[in-house]
Image (cartoon, rainbow over all chains, first blue to last red; front, side):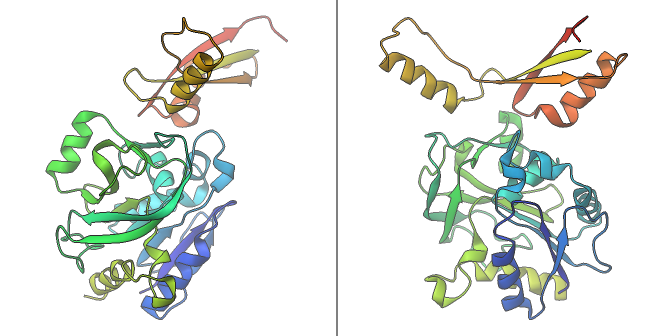
Length: 222
Length: 80
């Protein structure tokens, strides 16, 4: 699988994501700087990593969402290329309009950095096919702005269309309906606050995140 | 020409920062505060002749996230 990881000034999980992708796919991803206006030819997967792009100026993800490379990411998403946004990457994808809603300051204002239990709500997506529906897994989170909010109609639509991919099992950050990760309407864009790339090998203490990348690889290779 | 853009959270959107400020004001003994909402003020120094619709475009495309925020533009005419 030919993958790309987008790098903004202030990204800090780009290397973690690259290491996880190489571990699972056997290929180093292309690291694509935010000023690029095109993705490498034949790219099959795009990852928008966590971090503090542009120092979270204005709003988390706001500046990164308007950078040249995001137009190319939007075009790739429209062609059906799988795109994942993790943590700050999720914030960037909502700001870019590739996913609905917004990520606001955590309800109790604290930066939350711990392992959180999650429930896999949709096991049919190309990112979650290796999980069981309703399965409980644990991913770490590390964020200040992870409080997912959208209007009621949007939330109802996300639920009704099976686009809530992951839900927190405890109140992590005040997110509406405990939403931790969502899919776009075509199902090829996933945004989530927890970090699957940080739990992919036994040395990490857990390997719950590995199946997300393996499932993706299976889909792309199918 | 200068303009000010006020960005505020929409009604009904929870404002944790406003709540914390409210709580802190109460802690200081200010008991008459019913609610606090925090927002942003962005000052723009613009070329003469910049139209209202251009400023609105800036707000919609970047300055405000209209999923959760409202914006209000105030032109400061005659300010150098």
